[in-house]
Amino acid sequence: FGKESDEVATIELEEETVESLGGEDLEEYSLEEADYQPEPDIVDILFDFEPETVRDEEDLEKQLYQYLKARLGRRVVRQYPVGDQKIDIAIDGRVGIEIKIAESRSKLQRLVGQVLDYVEYFDEVIAVILDVGANVNIDSYIKKLRQLGAEVVVLEGDIKKKGRSREIIIKDARRKIIIR
Image (tube, rainbow, N blue to C red; front, side, top):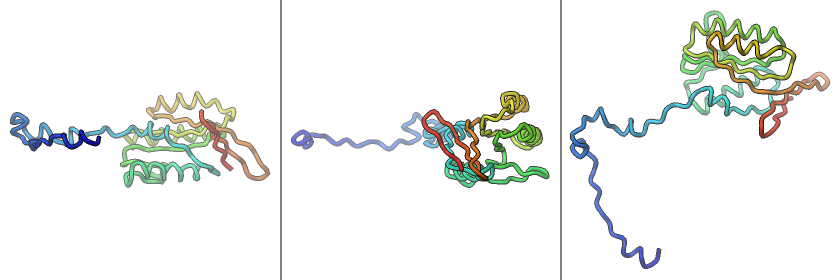
């Protein structure tokens, strides 16, 4: 930059006003519109979620809640009342998220029943399923959930029994997350 920096000219910029925009109405052009960024889709946010070690659905729910709260702030509520039930997580009272670990068909049947109830209360219902490789015909349940109008996010994993405790490993293209 040296010697050339002394030769740089300075120019005065005009302040942008309604007149300099050709008389456009302020409502037609505002910085808010020019800087508008569409809000990220909740499903996209969920696909970015990378849980740490969890023991059960409640633990997974807590982590997902903290993750969404960090991304979306006060709009996220845990254990949101829906009729005589509670959905795991609600966003703005219009998006409901129910979490299940697909260990058995009965858990997935319960999820379908819950989603059936929740679609009446929310604009969007999202089922987050941790597929642990159990023989539960998960694809048929995913199809049923989508027929009910729910979005479905599936995380893949395995359950290993270790003594009295169990271990869940969430598989990801880049790594394995071990849950004890």
